[in-house]
Length: 177
Image: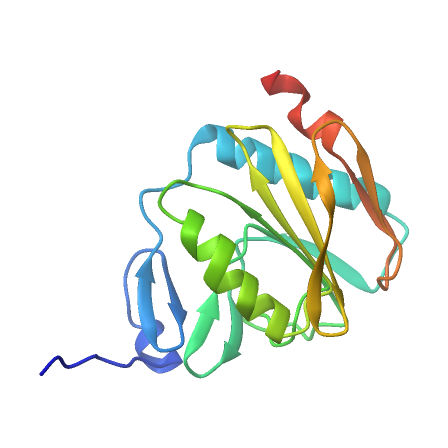
């Protein structure tokens, strides 16, 4: 017989280090992201802020806890949240989530979080592959993610969000070409 331990947000708050909690299962977020990963995440956040600079309803954040429910807490690399109360964590689905793939989290980002974000109603999910200098953009339509395309040099405009924004992937990946 195999016992599977189940954890909650209360347990999560007592842990040291960087963790995520998905469906009651703790997942370590180590090692720390590479410089390449961090620069790309920062540049994406900068692009989103640059194009949504007149919006006062939304915030662009990096690695902020999103408490989905009592047994699921994730830390997306970059998010846009709108009309979020000021608290220790996000309480509702971000409009846009960006995950920059690391070897240690690729499967989680491509499968588990893909499904979670889709179920929770995140309008756009962007998975960035720093080694390939490519981003896959997904848009939620009828509760399913539809792939908008693969982006390497192009600009993508988010038009059906509270604050219209964009990411110029040519600019994001430029320093690594």
